[in-house]
Length: 440
Image (cartoon, rainbow, N blue to C red; front, side):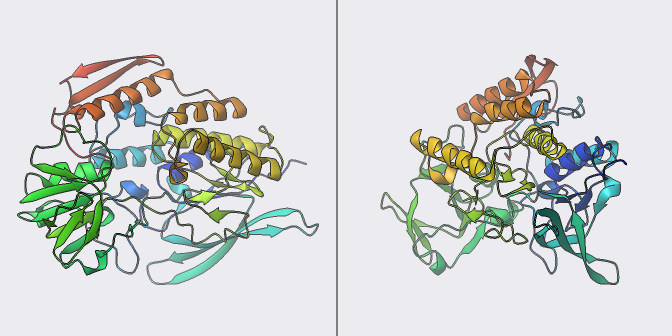
């Protein structure tokens, strides 16, 4: 008698969830069609632009009107689905959403997405023999006229909910006393409301730098407060100052002691990981300084190895990264990639963290893979037996990173062309404009 096919729940229909679902559908001999739970009414996750917050629920997306990517499409694409070659290398967010919609259409994912289905609980269950018996997933499904709560059983769960929905608010002394406009970059949508204002940006990550570029032409003054070296290529009238020591009703005070009047304060300070539908303690996981752990290979729960948290890493090439994680996770479920014991996987995760700290990394930056993402992807490919990422992806990624470090306002004037898995070239001025603009 044929063995029963595995039922997999996918939580979230952003890029990671679509990628997981696509590869489940590619293995019908092992897996039943996936069930993709999506809380909103459309796919795309963080790539969906919403001008205002949805009524009755917080906005998941941090997308703003003028965002363009800070990675070229030649390295952003899933390895098995290239972007339209007629597009410029650095894309407007609407082009990325259209790409994800085409990806879902091409691979038949749409039919398996349950829109307006918000997962409220994911619980492990045991068999009658006390062995792992899969998962119960409970979701609230919002219909046109009725709302119902449903619970379904699955053999495995892929959590693909992203980590750009829950802003981190730093404990700056006096922040609550500020009388001007205070917001996190998560809520920023366009520059016009800040015209003529004195705007202070806290943090010089991608969002902070991007908003400085957008606001400089309209604001009376833009101040960028951060602790790193000066950002190269910002407009000359953007004042870069040290981190804030305190805030008062109408003034911010950097650590250099200067007092700067401010009408608006925008916190570009990153995000927190939240999985409200998981009981982390029950799963042998916990909230950590860097997010959530311990996760074996930054992906699966050691004590429940049919639960995968896809896409929790930062400072990566996201779509190829999701591709590698999805293929590794499915290889585990197929039995083609044997795992160590739970204790060994937890020890491995701890050893990875200790190595990161020994090399001078901060605990809160543990999931920032940066250059380590390539050896990570190669290791997943080796263990699971799928083709590694083409060398050209890494080379273009690193070339873009170097170009951006030289001038944040002009690096997107470059356009790239892939010539093969290990060959590429820079094409100047063939597509798009040569002006700087938003980053992701």
